[in-house]
Image (cartoon, rainbow, N blue to C red; front, side):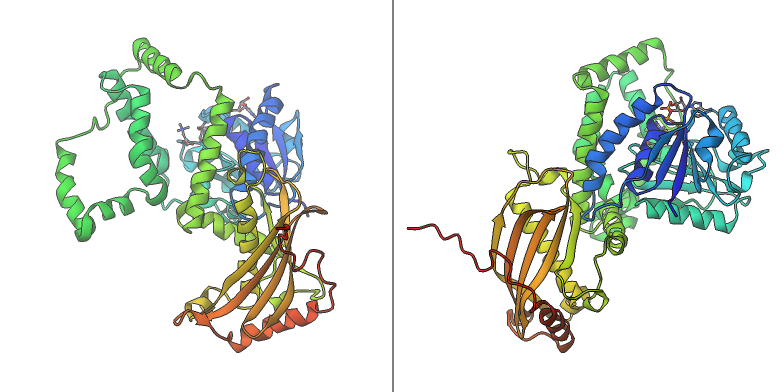
Amino acid sequence: MRKQAAIIGGGVIGGGWAARFLLNGWDVRVFDPDPEAERKIGEVLANARRSLPGLGNMALPEEGRLSFHADLSEACAGASWVQESVPERLDTKHKVYAQLADCVAAEAVIGSSTSGYKPSELQAGMANAHQIVVTHPFNPVYLLPLIELVSTEANSADVIATAKEVISGIGMYPLHLKKEIDAHIADRFLEAVWREALWLINDGIATTEEIDNAIRYGFGIRWAQMGLFETYRVAGGEAGMRHFIAQFGPCLSWPWTKLMDVPELTDELVDAIADQSDAQSGMHSIRELERIRDDNLVGMMRALGANDWGAGALQNAHDKTLRAGAGIVGHVDDIADLSQPVLTLHRVVPLDWLDYNGHMTESRYLQAFADSTDRFMEMIGCDADYIASGGSYFTAETHIRHLDEVHAGAKITVRTQVILGEGKKMHLWHEMCEGARVLATGEHMLLHVDLATRRAAPPAAQVEAALVKIATAHASLPAPEGLGRAVGAPR
Ligand SMILES: NC(=O)C1=CN([C@@H]2O[C@H](COP(=O)(O)OP(=O)(O)OC[C@H]3O[C@@H](n4cnc5c(N)ncnc54)[C@H](O)[C@@H]3O)[C@@H](O)[C@H]2O)C=CC1
Ligand SMILES: C[N+](C)(C)CC(=O)CC(=O)[O-]
């Protein structure tokens, strides 16, 4: 059955939710009375399509179907998830929930994007209180994985479990709060930082650009990968957290900050902030700034993924769940038809794989083939545990043929044929395609090694048996065109 989400309110956040669901294969039905909603969501979706598919190293499912509806109940028909993202006014949100009570299935989840209201305030007086939870996202919703999930005792365990499952299923992270509180967790930090920034401008200490530089050249980068407490633990040196608190705790009572005070947002202060912001960023349209932001976020999260850390580790875990759906098996024994080359890669070409010629740069062909080899090694049992036990494969020789161009956003596959698999030797042939179009081939000779001696050595029996099984099945395949080719320029 197709998965269906209703988006009620399709502004900045509703548009981001629509993109997140659509690109993860859900059908999305939107209700927003704004006649411009379709255009605005179209623009958000265009930005999401160029950035989200390249965030991880697995292709996302086929995109869902998007439709717009003039009537709220029509938009909710068949929805198992309803995401409310109307303006931050309690009366507006209550009116929406009252309408939803008449048309949304009792087992569906109604998530609210509210930045500040507690779920008990949203649920008060509502017949459908048991379905309403806070699912607070972060802009851009299609790239940032955090969802603050806030519930009350009115919510059943089933609603909470479903909410967590759906959020994880679209590649996000449900942070379930222990207790409800105004503005949840993250917006309390954001407000504290914002308050201090307003004071710094009000008091003539710094401009908007100087404040942004103080964040992006320093602690902002640190926060993105370790958060606050892990960062401060490291800052305490070998003595760790206790030493850090002993050294910097007293500052809290001086105090360095303006605490709960807020400068009055006079016309003068608002003009100063808006003028400084225009001088800093007015040369870019909002959509351009969104694309710059998205490219940076994708690059940063992909770097974290290479370290299997933070938001990158979360994406890697999501990639693993996508593998099975794409048909990439975990072990040779799970391959239904051993007589054909094995699918070892199914991904999108990300933005940071392009070069100055506007197509996938040469080193990424090798990366894609190396990723395929890694996947194939796992399939024959040469996985992380096996490598930790002291055995692995080293590549001794590689020959790549670049046959056709490929661009950002293209879905590519690699299928792998075993040319030889016996003893220490593993000779692989990878073929990279976009649809039926062959883009490149990679021929690789690998040797099994003992990681203690760093010398070639026979693999463990179960690895060799798995390799031989697939090599035997592939022995009847014709030799691939181009096998054994050298560059061969006459001299
Ligand atoms: N903008 C942000 O950075 C974030 C906002 N949020 C929360 O998301 C919610 C929406 O905020 P934004 O998207 O920023 O606002 P927005 O103003 O961009 O979008 C709100 C949309 O709701 C539509 N709308 C108004 N009344 C409606 C109704 N009765 N039924 C259906 N649609 C209706 C409007 O036409 C508009 O398109 C708020 O609760 C906000 O606190 C959450 C995270 C971040
Ligand atoms: C400014 N804001 C309170 C609406 C911000 C959020 O709620 C989350 C975000 O994306 O920063």
